[in-house]
Image (cartoon, rainbow, N blue to C red; front, side, top):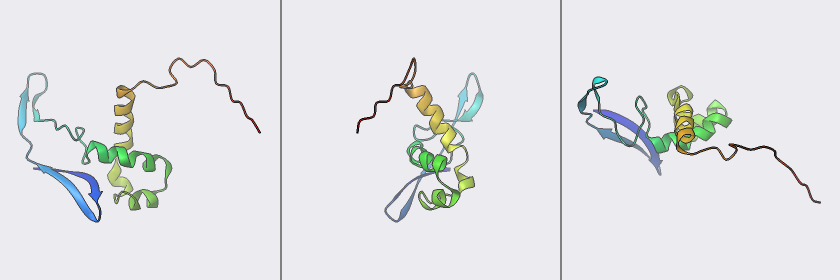
Length: 106
């Protein structure tokens, strides 16, 4: 049985709990089945990681620990997983950009 942390619901902490079947993959051998709500090796759901990724990249440890109620060390590689997902899911709006012009008007 495994647990994944999800966004809090008001003052209640929410976790997803599921029995994890093992599957026989022809390429990898016997492995734990993937779940649609979390990345392999993560203790958080995808949407919880996405919610926490921005504060982890711009805030101090105290803020990050207080906002989503997780410890800085607990967050692990969440921001990296979110960035990897976003990088593969959508192209950058700056791909092929040749120049940027800024006009100021007073």
